[in-house]
Image (tube, rainbow, N blue to C red; front, side, top):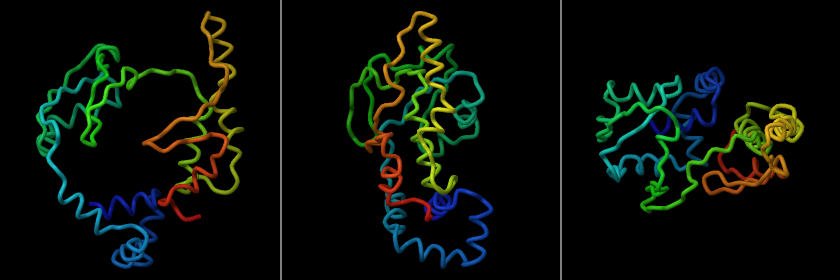
Length: 205
């Protein structure tokens, strides 16, 4: 399972992945990947995975298409397979699902409190578009020189959003971009190429 996940991450496009495996063979491919990715350590870590910190869970969902995996995992037995006792609850809206206390287990053995951990920010920040583009560049979905800021500006239309917000009496942000962290890694939208190059695991150019 670990080997398959790593190969898929390196070759996200199915046809290219199959062509690569046909050309070199699965065993050769894994041997090559092992030179820069600790496959053995990863496999051992998954094999020795600790039991879930919390087994009894109540999961709320909004009845929309993207909730299908959450809903169907229950009757198909996926929760039980992984040692979880899950009660899936249909709710009327996001406000019902939100954890009002902001207290949660971070999955790393600590309990944290952050009242804004599930916040709603509807503004189309151009920096978010730039971040998405860096990941597309990282995995080879886009190639060559990329004018990140220009693409973000054309797609996210933050200036139009700011104008419409003013028309209805809302105060838009004074900027269309901001720095933020993804899984603890800071992202500066002014330096997207540096961010792409900072990943040790990425698709070769």
